[in-house]
Length: 125
Image 1 (tube, rainbow, N blue to C red):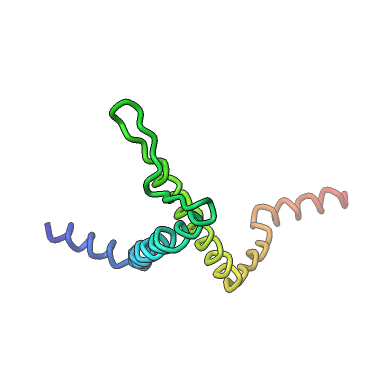
Image 2: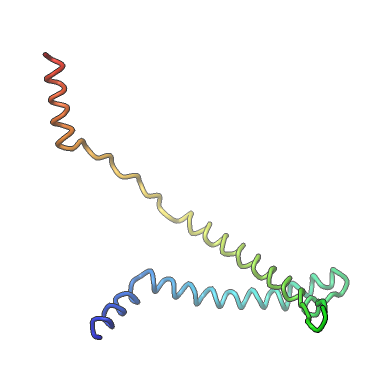
């Protein structure tokens, strides 16, 4: 049991896992900000432009079921905004990354050197 806990601790403390957890927490908070932006600012303005339409109330009733497509439209707008900002952030971060130089070419192996010597000796004969 002790080795299992040690292994889990080592896994959880790896840099990538901690970075991912921080990214998820920030992403959730950013998502809430974008949702509020869309629900409380953008969609009311778009609704006014579209003729005083309240997107939250847009729905179609099919039998006893109510299909709220207005909320779907708001979710799509949320997604597009979040995806666009993530794209911009990743693009900005990529500018700061140093390019990785290609690895230096390796010299010939001992076998290749030996075969080259044999070839050269045979060519001289």
